[in-house]
Image 1 (cartoon, rainbow, N blue to C red):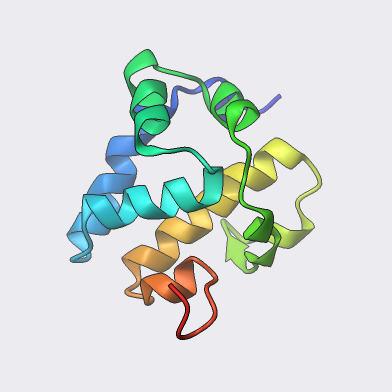
Image 2: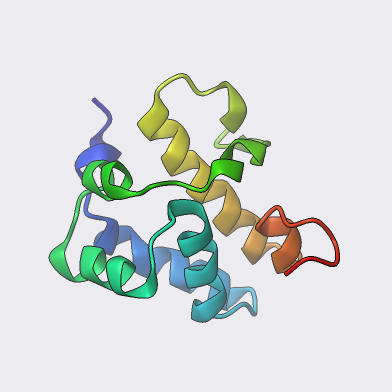
Amino acid sequence: MSRIFGTAFAAVYPLYVAKVERKGRTNAELDEVILWLTGFDEAALRRHIDQGTSFEQFFADAPMNPNASLITGVVCGVRVEEIEDPLMQQIRYLDKLVDELAKGKALEKVLRKPVGIS
C-alpha cells in the first residue's frame, strides 16, 4: 500500500491551494475542480478536510465523475490512464487536474466540458 493512501487529504489540500494560487488561479477554482472529479458538494468536501479523512477514505466516499476516465496525460512520469490501482489512479487524476489548472488551462478544458456547454 502506498503511503499516500493513508495521508490525510487535509494535509495535501493546502499544497494544492498554494500551487494554484502561485500561478494566479483561485481557491474557488481548485474547489470546483475537486468537486467535479469527486462528485462531492461543498459541504462534503469541507467535512472531509475538517475530519482529516485519508486519501483512501476520501476517494472511497466519492461517487466520482463518470467523465474522469477522460483525464489523460503524464503525472510524475506515469500516464494516468495506464495506472492499474484504482485508488492511485484517482489520486493521480486529481494531481493531473491541479497541474492543468496551475498551468493556466481553461477551466472548461480542465473539467472536460465540451465548448459552449456550462
